[in-house]
Length: 344
Ligand SMILES: Cc1ncc(COP(=O)(O)O)c(C=O)c1O
Image 1 (cartoon, helix red, strand yellow):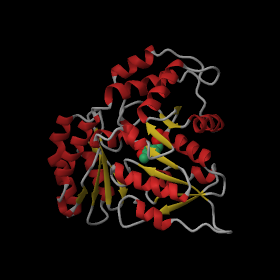
Image 2 (cartoon, rainbow, N blue to C red):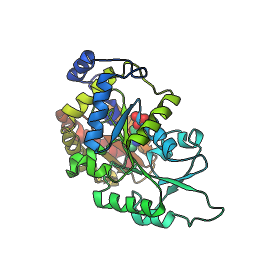
Image 3 (tube, rainbow, N blue to C red):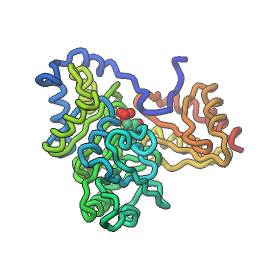
């Protein structure tokens, strides 16, 4: 079905004609041998935007997160992070299997880990206490419905990590969205962390790719880890060109995704007693009064809308640049009926 409105993820976006043209025209070299010029250009641009000394192009955000954890920690160390972090749930335990670290999820009564909760979770250091190695943050927070952690809170989290004497890694797969919705400079967010991962294959619409930014020394180490993980890429400029195009041409348009998410949220809130988590950015979580998420996913498909069951009682809808606004508006009433019928 070609006219399906696919709201399962912002990763479903397909490269635009302009992006494909940029990929086709990319100047390339062997990035493992002596460097790919377009990849160098992307890395320099990302480092500049994030206010870091250096950046490194990765095939995926998962690999970039893992490389950051490998660089910052030693096996046996503990990593503190939000209980619903992407690293905890969706990266196949890579940080345990490959970096050899112990993850300790911090859970509180808020959707995203706060500085106070992080402070409370830290153990006193002692002869037989596990070594705390790293704090990981996520902004925007996928599992919390694209929620933005504002700059002041991010700074407070960084201060706690500093008191604990450990570095901070920021999973900023959707940091672009946080920047667009708040107007906070990317570099201000990035200054709250030693390393920052950003993704090109979500709202920016590139087919592949992420970058890790940090100091020269840390990125040089990450380069070795990337190669070890099998992430050395040859004529990667074809992919870097897509990422650069996304950065230059698609960043501002994320505001449209956010507006579409608000439309969706307004249309669905209250249907059959379901409640939306008011969206900060492009992800809409819908909490259902009973376990009917799978049924709604099936019924929505029948009216041409794809969404995901985040849990039996929670649905997730993600807006992105391939969402046609008119098509979205046209289907909202029918989608509300689907939810209302299943949820009542
Ligand atoms: C917050 C967050 N971090 C990391 C990733 C992993 O990125 P990738 O799919 O490029 O491995 C994702 C992917 O959805 C994500 O949402």
